[in-house]
Length: 264
Image 1 (cartoon, helix red, strand yellow):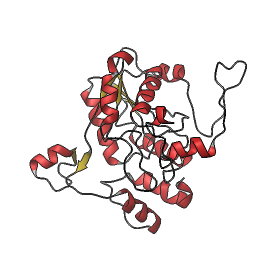
Image 2 (image 1 turned 180 degrees about the vertical axis):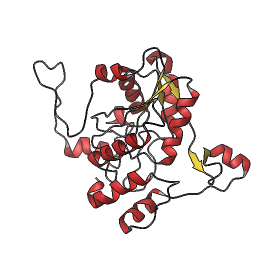
Image 3 (image 1 turned 135 degrees about the horizontal axis):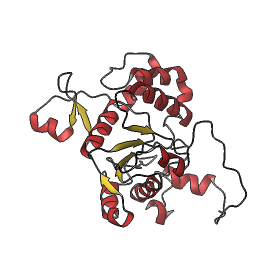
């Protein structure tokens, strides 16, 4: 656990799972003559995904484990514009993550709704789903995600703030630094043959300018509208209004319909 997660503390949810919930032995090596596992959502192999990507273009991959809200989508638009004439591969993990996250099958429903809502305006976006269970291993997991996305055809990979990070289940302290994953990804970028693209948080400053990078908002003295994850969940459960600058209505409708079963 120490070598993989950087800690052996049982306050780390994946370390706890490894020690207290999983078996004592692992079997490694090649598998022969077995059919691919079946999932309750569409899954494509790396070869199948690569066939959907335009030849000769850079591919910017985005990994996430939560529903995509407005700030995420604005970040994707920035990334696709910054890498000229590129394709944006939205490639979320859909297996188990950590307690309190949105259930994988519910997340798939939100992704499919958003894909259908945006595909005409953003034809350069591609969507595929990865049957992978997040380990919340911070910088080391960021490297794993870079390798996986390279297999799926990515030339660039977005690493956001605190990627694959987690907090102590007791104190709430972060196990990894906010930018550790970015720095580790950049350090190994040339070796892996995947360029790291990284962005600040996107913040909403009003209907005229919409979303801008956080440092730009501070530089201009803009007032930033905020809605915390805790408040978002409270409003979901209570049926109170959730502003459209924060979340897509189609995504909110799916989460509300799912109710408490939406949460792991």
